[in-house]
Image (cartoon, rainbow over all chains, first blue to last red; front, side, top):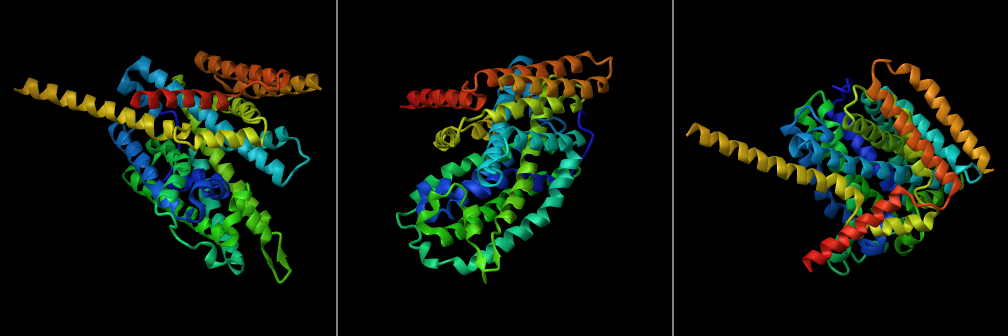
Length: 372
Length: 78
């Protein structure tokens, strides 16, 4: 097998948690607010089933082909030519997705923290760092994610507790003013994030305890939902109607903290959380892209591809969008239903699953006929 | 200014080659071809972006295709 390292199911859950929440925690509140108004905290509940569905499909496909990733079993299911074609589309979407993430990282760091540093330095350093981690293999990324989790939760809860003096319950009221619809509309945007759980199909074959794969994946979805709900509640309680004016509300809310005029300017904490999370997120997608490319080309190992692929997604990430206005346009398009993460996270695996299922039925029928 | 960028990206690509090429076993031709192809694609893409900084990106192309697909699917069902 191309990857010799193994991770535990728990580590995979943690990896997926970071891969979803890292960008979500900052950008979700303001994007969802547009549709859901003060009900943004209900939206994650509606989006959660999509995450569960994508984990379920990935796991079912995994039980059919236990030792293969999606690039390999798409060839088994559809035949070599169509399988390669589907794998190519999948890889293309993953490449662009990874490049958009890197762009987001670069743009955010430049606009919030290091305005005078050239962008290619920031992006280049991150890609280089991730290249080291990916070169180390899946085990390294899994352990890194495990290491980040306690710090992440500690800082997250510290921020939430410090924000408590600024909250006002009446900003959240009236709950469900216009019925359920606004929060359901808001949840459409969240599908972008929850559909990314589909990427789990690259990690399931490398688990030590495979039977727990689905359980920890589902658990990860639920924890993500819970974290998003908590973030959204806090943001709406602190900011109320002005939430949509901020690009990254959690960041701005943390700037707000000032306790006894001594404990202030804590946005460095958010940045620490966010950098650690984004590092894991980029690593996860970078690893998926590298592994997928190596398997698509039938290579014997993926280590030689780490740096070239890093160069490629770094270059695409630099130029993904020219400015934030274009990016906002992209995310507006993406949030209107037919998004790239939905295609590679849910639609392609679902299609493969149905084809595999039908083929299996036919094989059973043929066997039955022969026995008669 | 563009010349400096082109020179530096070429230096980066050369460094990648110097670092990685000896590490690939000499019997594995496919690995070498894949490595060289992807690196050269990255290099060409970066040169294109340096010379024409306003050219389109994969993310925007994917957006465009997805919107077209969405319109086709919507037209089928309406």
